[in-house]
Length: 259
Image (cartoon, rainbow, N blue to C red; front, side, top):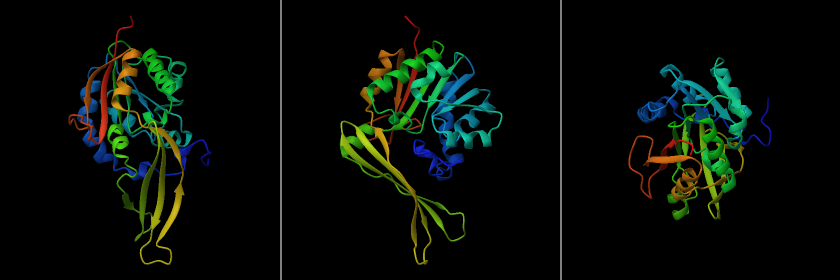
């Protein structure tokens, strides 16, 4: 099925642009440490994409429900894991989509900035709180927008991967346009590089995605007001301390006892 205009992430094969074995190896210690605190083995992988984190957690004994709004990404996840549980739902729809209380949740890979309004982020956290048992851990990871916004950064490092044909390469270019107030237009582009050919660089796909660069203080404030306690803030998924110039913002929170 071809991607619709609403399914922005159906236009580019993101799974092929990430070195997943290396990434999962780096992230495994933190994932296991955080989820070891889960009061139940049922966990949510929010913004699961093509399902790599869900498939990583299953052999560790977790019952994972992957949730994503992108049908094309879920089709990839289901093809790789036919027995897995994957739901198409937006982050603000969790309370109506998840029927069983969960023991934990992860939301990784810069998923959070796709919620562009404070009301949407509040609805996500409030709905997630309804789905989690008291004491359930929540692991959030996104880019460090304190750094990106303060510096006005407009590009991410270029990614170069082997192409499908010998001698070709896939180039992944990511651009950002700043609009003020943390609002961004993210423009990922997939190019084919064929050195020595008549057209050595060919644009294969590109699209615009509106994002909101959430700062650490904004996220922590909303978590605290929706039933979560922030226990730890890191600058990478490998455990370095957070600073204003860290690559990422990683928050380890906990669903508090409803009062």
